[in-house]
Image (cartoon, rainbow, N blue to C red; front, side, top):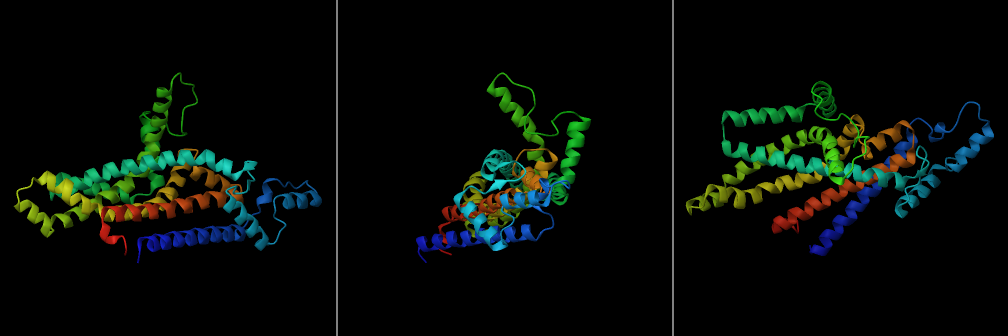
Length: 322
């Protein structure tokens, strides 16, 4: 199979997955109990006004017509009109997406630094007591629920110690210069990013440890050692390149978990991102906003898997045509 056919097939499959996810979400939203028009309708409103409201919201159309109207809005990039925000969904998403990207990118970088550091140390330290303690600590963070860890972090670091802010993305006070503004954003980012990164750090560390130990037992590593190369050069230049391949494949799986996990964390920490927007939209029965946020999330997952495949193929040419 040629490179063009391979990547063309991957793009086509990704588009089919994206369309299927969007369509299934649309169907589930219309099967769910509740009526989006209920946020405007009151008991004292007469039936004629209720019918007019439903007509303006497009809820009087048959389901198949609503589907094609919604699909047209999605393809055009407008995403419809938000019932709860009284503005186009695209504008609502453009306000929330940068905040979620700030959180998820920070989490991804943080978990990568922590996970690779401890994974590398555990693989090289062998059966030392400190390495075992690190393994147990990482297993603890991997096992506990994220929402419980978030609540405990708020209780300890905000409530008891008063070191870190417990909610929101920035302080309400006005700062004089951009450096103070950036520091304030970073200060508010510490708790949600750390809480979300710890479980992923544990998984990254365990995978790096297992993969690196397997690579270090390979014949070419023994050959490099026999030629007198330093241990540091062997590990960092020769072993880590192959040990990272399973981790790169896992990065594509991280995206749906990051997006799903950030929804809970954003809601707990009042972080104005996609997660909080989606949860508030569910409570308000704001179907266009829910569908728009879900579509963006599905696109991020598909794109993450595509980028992981491209990066893996760049590192190891042997898997480019598989």
